[in-house]
Length: 296
Image (cartoon, rainbow, N blue to C red):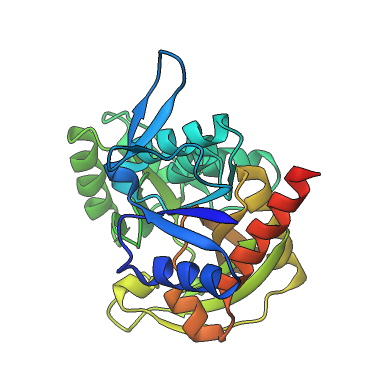
């Protein structure tokens, strides 16, 4: 099978792991930098051009690893492959959907998946009431399209919350606000979903000076066993967003597990190290199975 791995560089750990496992299983795989791809439409036939070659008919499947800053263009590249009947582990529309935290939480809350109390607004004249609706400070403020814990701020007082929110509004930055779940205590859980199963899960714990538990923020990791409820939330979240490969982030609260985010391009390094599970191989098996079903 010929596979295109849409990633900006082979120097990225996750890209290397997926490529190596595909080769180990006998497949031809190429790293295609989607930021270097051009899309030509109109005329006789659409094209996806990479290094002046049309690669639209060159692959049986694609694995998108689209960076946040180029979501729009990357999703357009994925869309062109989709329209050419090439299998993708994530549909273009669902990549874009997952990148917007507010839209993701709107959809999942509507499907009955538990989330922290959340509010988003663009009204700079109503900040006091917005904070009060969530029960006051402390509260979490998030940029809607942040990643790796960037753009996630803990406002410990109402005064600081008002200042931060007002600044974001004046910068025309889309944010959301969430209640602070004190008992989560700087910990969250990443469930890695491939196809219709959770293939690995880890607990991420922040250091003493940091409330964010992301590995990129210096958090530590360890393997964790999910409860049946946590596993159900992770699988349903990936299904409702429409992602064949997803990282689903949860926290444990007094009210039970709560979903906080769904990642369309989850990293492999931290969770493979924490669990010892070959997730890259699971992804390639999923591509194999999906392509076989598609040919039937």
